[in-house]
Image (cartoon, rainbow, N blue to C red; front, top):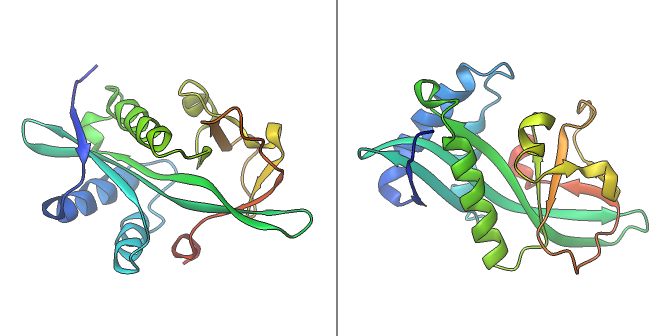
Length: 177
């Protein structure tokens, strides 16, 4: 397992984050769905994001982003409920070495420190289960995007004392482009 230095992004990291994200998703079995552009649009629109990079020997090799998500309950009540973890990117040459896990752990720790109730993610069920994410449908949450494979919408409950109302989780509009 590579031990990368995990830190919050700085303005000097923006180009490296684009390169890491583009390279990671170009080689992904899920393909590149414009993740780098989504990150840039979130920044341009001044969305309150948390962004971390993984650095080895001064090179940015990984990135993770958290952005706000909201919930629409069955009764139509809208509320801010937590954060969406997306995207998680690691350069192909550094994948499978634990860097993505380090980034996710840092994101979870920071979200917990900030008092977030939960984090949701769309991703590989087995990968995210090992990192504390359960099937979101187990707590009555559904993703706004159609056609999500069963079990791919995951949730990590950060505050067990806060009840989670079921409903549809909505990401920032930048994810819908």
